[in-house]
Amino acid sequence: MEDKKYKKLTCFKAYDIRGKLGDELNEDIAWRIGRAYAQCLSPKQVVIGGDVRLTSESLKLALAEGLMDGGCDVLDIGLSGTEEIYFATFFLKVDGGIEVTASHNPIDYNGMKLVRRGARPVSGDTGLKDIQALAEENKFTSSKTKGSYKKINILDAYVDHLLGYINLDNLRIKPLKLVINSGNGAAGHVIDEIELRFKTAGVPVEFVKVHNEPDGTFPHGIPNPLLPEARQDTANAVLETQANMGIAFDGDFDRCFLFDEHANFVEGYYIVGLLAEAFLKKEPGAKIIHDPRLTWNTIDIVESAGGIPVLSKTGHAFIKERMRIENAVYGGEMSAHHYFREFAYCDSGMIPWLLVAELVLTSGSSLGELVKSRIARFPVSGEINRKVENAVELIADIEARYSPLAINIDYTDGLSMSFADWRFNIRTSNTEPLLRLNVETDADEELMITKRDELLELINS
Image (tube, rainbow, N blue to C red; front, side):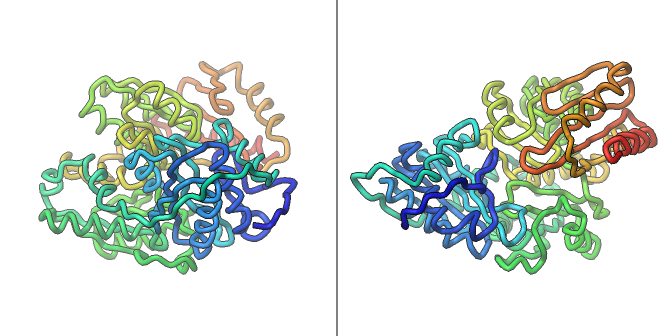
């Protein structure tokens, strides 16, 4: 690779690598990242994979060259989601893993998610800044040997692991119809394998597959079900086929989003409560990690089920670290990231929908029925984002205005303030110039709307 020094690689973010194709991320930069990873972490073996984007393969191969030039052996699992890299890293007991993905970013972006041995995250505080500095410097120590490259397939072992979270007998209670939207096909190979396993085992679960074939041109739009416009195809299929549930993935399927039997989108916050309860039935007294944005529903469910709720700062690196410290069985964020102790404390988009499908059958209730009372008990605003210039001053003004009436003030992540019958969290984004607001109340939707609008007026003014 050419000896060209960059002043600053802007594709390095707080938790991962993401950049616009061309100047921000290209094959030369991918090579540097691989070479810097090899020099900083001294791995013997690293697994790599890539999402469905058209540029993922070439970036992945350049990354592999960098790793091999640094003396590292590369195992390439091919088209994959981020969690398949997590799984391969801990299952194969190798020294690290890198997924080439930009998840739900626009089509002209790509990126990487990096882990070390045990699928521990490599983020800003745990080595990513060192890799960035070395990649920017572009001066590497010579390696005595060049590493090898090998293509491998871990799909069977990965699906074996996924199905270990559920009891297949529970899925035989009665037939179930699921709409599964694989975005633009990144998750398609996993869905196909799970469907085959169910058929072979005589499990009466019917899959209605939407956008299941891999297509890196993103003909069905950016796979980001947090955007209302990205939900319609899933919702329509649920209604047309009279399915029991809808499932939609983001671009690297480490998040899944659920729709009830009436095609209503279910906020990730309420799924956290469902999964927490499911795990506490299997392991009474366990610890459950949650983030500060929305908390009352999770705390209420966990404490009622005899568990211990533990608050953590938002973000996968913080949640994973806290889960390890607490040996928590499960952790959930309202953004639809769900973390599992037996999955090396990593997040998975496949495990949640399997657990919820099992819960629907064992409870005898539909997904809509399972969450209806919780939505009524703790109405939420959903996360509202506003671009602002003066975030720090705004948060200080809001704190000064509301603190005389607050019962509790918490600074774990941004500003959380609780009152007798409502609470809010306001925080700055780690990756964008945004202020993020969440409001919830105790069984009072009108109050939630009033307080939401009140806070938005302050922010907008």
